[in-house]
Image (cartoon, rainbow, N blue to C red; front, side, top):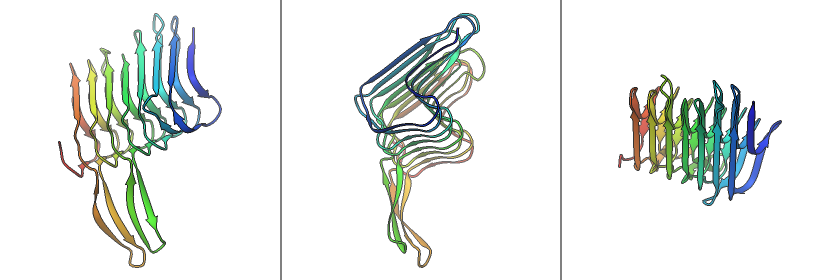
Length: 275
């Protein structure tokens, strides 16, 4: 019947891990008949906050749909009603796999915003029939890096902590229905990489769209202005750009539908070089 399994779950409130997440989290769930099945590595019913995800961390999740019209969903990390925030870097590996005839997979899924305040070097993989997303937000921005304002009430300078997207993101959707999409990183609003991107991003779909980076109702921005602000005269002075390069590789392949490397509803801004 109905099947649900989670490695670490907070069913009625926020989940907070103040330090680093290392080691292994392995979750498997198998449904039967026509019921819904879910498997989640880390889950919160509200906000989910992690200090950092270390280079030795391994989160591996598999959800298998039951026979008939059963559906399965696999999440590496999930917030059901709030932001997902990582206060440092994201490393290691996160793998979400949906098996069986129907379902979805998400590496990291936030119902609101997803904030990685450092950089990401993780290997993130999502594979499913009906839709696969490496990183995903439901109603918010996806941001990598932190803009820091330091100084006095009269003069301030902006800098950036972290902000680089490295490692790899692989999303694969095998379904034969329209809308069975594969997306490496999906932001409902803006997708902001405050540094540079050197990641290997691969999105592969059969019947649906395949997209490397997508801002559904916003902009894609790579790089951040570094500036000083004089409150006495209300003057901003731009001193340069943090990061801004788009390197690595982005591969998007769909057998029967559309494929996009970068896709934004509004603008795409790469502040540095295309390498």
